[in-house]
Image (cartoon, rainbow, N blue to C red; front, side, top):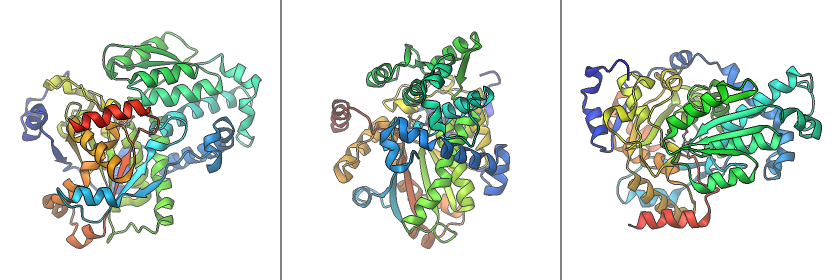
Amino acid sequence: MTEMNEECLASPVINDLIALRETLWFNSKVTTAEEGLMRTGLTRREAEEAEARLRRFAPLLAQAFPETAAAGGIIESDLVPIPAMQARLAQTAPIAGRLWLKKDSHLPISGSIKARGGIYEVLAHAEKLALAAGLITTDDDYRLLLSPEHRAFFSRHKIAVGSTGNLGLSIGIISARLGFHVTVHMSADARQWKKEMLRNHGANVVEYEQDYGVAVEQGRQAAASDPSCFFIDDENSQTLFLGYSVAGLRLKGQLQEKGITVDAAHPLFVYLPCGVGGGPGGVAFGLKLAFGDHVHCFFAEPTHSPCMLLGMSTGLHDRISVQDIGIDNKTAADGLAVGRASGFVGRAMELLIDGCYTLSDQAMYALLSLLNETEGVQLEPSALAGMSGPQRITASHAYQTQHRITQEQMQHATHLVWATGGGMVPAAEMQHYLAQAAR
Ligand SMILES: *Cc1c(COP(=O)(O)O)cnc(C)c1O
């Protein structure tokens, strides 16, 4: 931290973070969607272009990954009501409105939200290379790119990324399938099964004993010395962000199909687990494009890794890390084990996010077990971070008053918990999580 601002750090919120207490922070800078979207520096047009690019690649994906064929090569997840979970949660604290789960945990190819941004950025890179080499035009059938000649072309190019696990999994799998030489720099948090799965797909995995920040930095340096290597920068990439944003645009159609109205009388609250910020930030950007002021977005983090809450609430963004205030960044929520937030995302989303909160690892385990029991849905710990949000927002009358949300509107609210990962967790690993919850 170069410019430690004493004043920023002498607040009750920061004291709670330091004490590892579960914290709820509301963003006083939040403004209209229109104004907030301008601040991002990104446009609706760019999000729509990302959506169009994914449509161009859909035939290729349908062929390369048969599990996506039924959906025509569109990588999208189910949206399901979870009434039994809602009833169980209500035994401790009520949720006004209805509770839904967005199952990015079960996205095809890599079983996490990273199947959006990560895969999108590799496809965007492949398209750029192939167009520049005159191998395709944007009107061609991109299945061409799966031919041996095109694979040989991609094999002359390298891709590198740093990850706590899931981003590496997405990028490694799609890169290897297209023929790229791909290296994934994995932090100490990364689960063994994710490393093994990647190696089985033909990716090169480099393991570190340090956290995410170090793995990313090492990856960045290794790539910098090699001009044929493209580094996917999870901390700064606008391409990743735009890949995630497509989720927000598509959710509009999905809610319509389910007969769910989102308007002034029917607010939508969305709870997004946050690591470095690209995934939740990109999705929230897309949600704001789709629903404007009628959607309210919250980021959820572990008490041991509250980097976005720290960066946003102090206004220091990536100029401060959780280690700077004595927090260890050690959490069972490996997808969220990030000590320093993306400066790009923190600043871009500064006027659009209603708030951030933290929850303990034990709370995530308990919710993991409850969801398994009530709905038979299995997730990894990170993916439960959003699940404690609806009760907290329902209980926060100060927040509702600030946003002029009435009791009546709350009764008609839709709460959407973004389940970000877990669809590919091996059964033995899931048993271990459930055992942990039982403690
Ligand atoms: C990566 C990840 C997130 C958060 O995404 P960021 O872009 O790191 O903020 C949330 N949940 C899971 C399971 C993840 O893998």
